Structures are given as C-alpha cells and as structure tokens.
Amino acid sequence: MGILDRLFSSPAPFISDGGMETDLIFHEGAEMPLFASFVLLDSPEGCEMLRRYAVSYFDLAQVASRGFVMGTPTWRANGGWGPKLGLDDAGIRDVNRRAIAFARDLRSAHPWRDHILIEGVLGPAGDGYAPEQLLTPTEAARLHSAQLETFAEEDVDIASAFTITHPGEAIGMVNRARDLGLPFALSFTVETDGRLPTGQDLDCALSEVEAATGGCVRYYGINCAHS
Image (cartoon, rainbow, N blue to C red; front, side, top):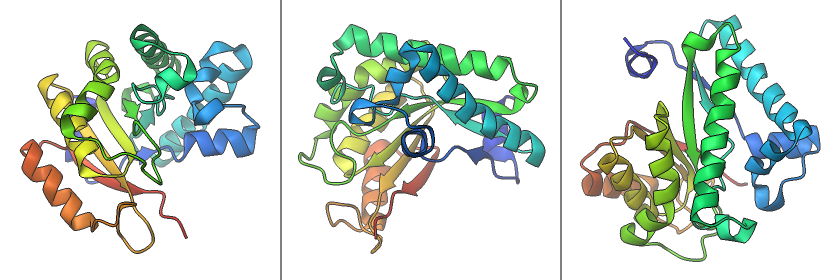
C-alpha cells in the first residue's frame, strides 16, 4: 500500500504543516515579496529557513508516529501571481519543479521518509481573502495549468489548493487536475460566519464543486477564518 492509500485508509489522522508563509515571515524574518515563499529557494539562507520549517514537522510526525503531508513552497507560483513576480510560463514551471525537488531531497534525508507525502501546493490566482475577480472554471484552468501540469509531470503524491474564495476557480482547478490524473484536495477561505469571502454559504460552495467535478476531490479543508 502506497503512502497516499495509507492517508485515506488510516484511522489515525496525518499531520500537515500550518501557514508556511506566515510562520517564516513572523518567526524567521523571511523577506517574501507578495508572500511568495518560492523566492527562498534562490539563496542558501532561504533554503535553510525552508529546511528548518519542514524538518520540524518531520520530527513531530515521527514522535507522534503519524504520517505527514508536506506542502511545497508554491502557493504563489501560478499564472495569476507569477507574472507579478517576474515569471512567465516557463519560469512558473521551473519554480515548481525546483520546489518539488527540494521537498523530495528533504524527505529522502529524514528517517521518517516512508511516512511523508509530498503535496504540490496551489493558491488562488488573486487575493485569497478579498477576491477582486471571480474566475470561470475555464479561466481558472488556464491560469493554473502550468503549475498543475508540472505537478503531474513530477508525480507529486497529491495537489492541494488553499485559500480558494469561490467555486468557479475551484472547479477549474479540480477538473484540470482530474484530466491530468492528479489526486486533488481543496480548502476554501471562510470568514467567522462560516461563509466564503464572496458571502456564499460553505455548504453551497462544496455542493457546487462536487456537482461540477463528479465528486473527485479527495478531501476538503477550511482555512484562515478572520475575526
């Protein structure tokens, strides 16, 4: 049984990391333009920050005898934010490849490596907390294709989208991942009233995604409720 199968069959929850960009900025003093953690891959100091962050979770998972879902530093490495950070399509693909290789190297060096799953992380093409544009599924699939195609080519264990604000973008991402044969998880941003930033009820958003994607999302999450 592979690690992904164990994730879905194990009665013991896997551990995941929590808020990479926020953690590195406030605890490590990292400088990340537009919250783009992938820029840390460009320097030895940045790579060391990422290494410490990941290994702290590897160690925690080992002590707890749990599996760990390790997210790549690629939340901003998509077709919406890439151009704002100087990346064209080829640059987006290169950054994502490098991030996956970095994660795999860290995993292979740790004694708990057989229990660590590599998660290709996606973020929204726009603001994950106050969306300025509601994407159609077609627009979303186009903006996220370079990243998703790279995740599929590099055979990550699962791709996961975080801080997604509306179903249109979610549906486009999920359907593109399905076309690529890529396992996919989805997490919506919610406010303290349980609604998305658009005001849509979470239950309605989940039902809309399920209906439009054939129920192929492996699991759902919520994140970043604001007070």
